[in-house]
Amino acid sequence: MPRVAEPQPLPVAQARGGDPAAWRVLFTRYQLPLYAFIFEMVRNEQASMDIVQETFAGAVRYIGGLRDDAKFASWLFGIAHQKCLLHFRKQHRDVWSDEELADAPDDDAEWPGDALLRREQAEEVRRRLEQLPPPQRAVLLLHFIEDFSLEEIAAATGVPVGTVKSRLHYAKRALRQLMEDNAP
Amino acid sequence: MKTFREWILDEHRVVEPRLNRLQDEVLSATPVVGTPLRGVREQTALLSFPAKAWRELIWPSRHTWAALAAVWVVIAVANVASRNPAELTRPAMATVTPDALSIWQLQQHMLADLSLPPQAKAQSSESKLPSPGKRGAMDWLAREHEAWT
Image 1 (cartoon, rainbow over the protein chains, first blue to last red):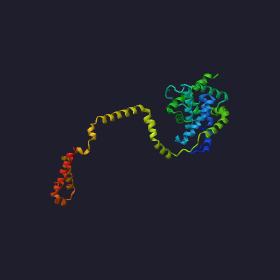
Image 2: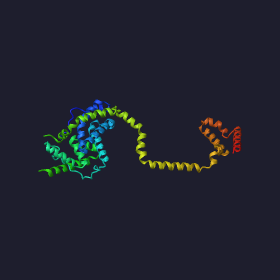
Image 3: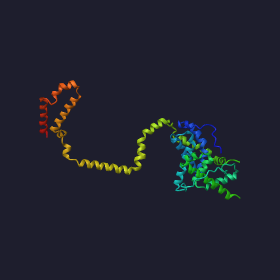
Image 4: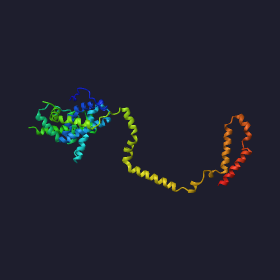
């Protein structure tokens, strides 16, 4: 699957240097995918806006902690992921702790997320995504929205690569199952 | 027909104007300052080592550290309290006896002899023992010491 292409190099170094114009470029590039990721996680428009704002503010404040400019995207989504986690904690929802999953086999089977979809199919995938446990939903969304690698998803979610692999595998399988069950 | 990514981004595109306004709010509310380069950052990290050590080493086990400190204070107090007050007030000179003084002087002479070249050693062989004048000084020192104690 092709990675999300960047038309030009992102000005992360300039942003670190304190250039507001560079920050605008970065925010403009990531604001929509970031909002989509957060909204699909928390399912609340105002909360999503608040989390996007907090994520941007956190990025400006803590850009010094980013060691590799090439990892800006996964780092930014990592901040957003943490904010989602805090949002769930504030709501006293212990939905984040998932059960240990067995090691996942390698599977690159075709699945709806990779394919071209009609509107109704896309809506269906979205509805089914909502039914997945948040940890699985998070890895699947990061995989969908920014086409992150396993390592990048692991960095963003703060879990080992093996866990990401398992979650992705089981999420894909669950989503496929949900789609098949719903098929006419 | 679009990919799921394209569908989902299109779905949320309606909030883009709000997101643009959000950018302005963040950039006006959060001071955008240049972050030091890595070298300077490492230097800063070194300077902040005590704070980091406090945060990561001391603070998480503060009760243990406090208990250890209390034990040391108790040991120090017990040590001071168990000392003989006479020992504390007695001058250091009182511990030097005339015998110790004469032994020390003898050692000084032997050391001086050993460090002399062979010719000079032959000349000074007669002066190995303290001269009468020096012996008088030793006697005086011993008398002074007795008077002091």
